Length: 224
Image (cartoon, rainbow, N blue to C red):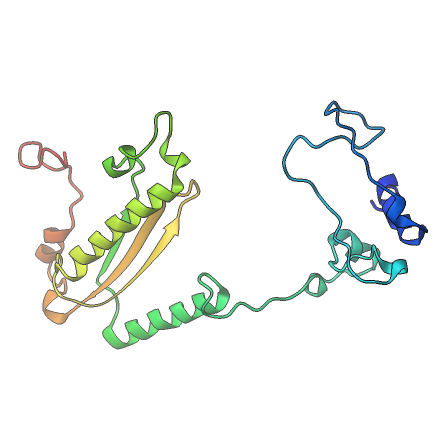
């Protein structure tokens, strides 16, 4: 790519040009497409060359090795490309952070036993708390910050209902994780490990908390 790019050849040759301070780069102010010259950009972001070093012969050598440079240098191993950065366990979502959380979860299961409940909470982008804050013409996907904050508040309320409110009984330990769907909506997976007297033991216990029926229209009109 660099070998046949006339612009790249010109920039590389400037490293040996005398009186470089007298040279200027001019942009055509007409935004109409003209392949014979540089055109003024149509956006506010412009690519630039970062100049480092004081050696005039190596002024335009790049300190960051890109894909093209790597191929030209004959390097074929991906693990030797670029600069390796090790993320500490304090970085949320990093490998070490996820490994630590996994080990913590396994330690909880080892201490308190296998989970009794698997609860899923899904975000509804048309919750009233979200829709009333939208500006005219806005959709929930236009305000991911609002959706995330409302969901976070409801998620905390849900955890209080399950843990402090003892909705299913006394909880001995719990683990939960927030995930984001393909369209960006958050949802929660919650594992509850109950104390001995609150565990599900008989079919009647399961029927008390699990329902696969449409709620009765007269008894539960809202849920219906």
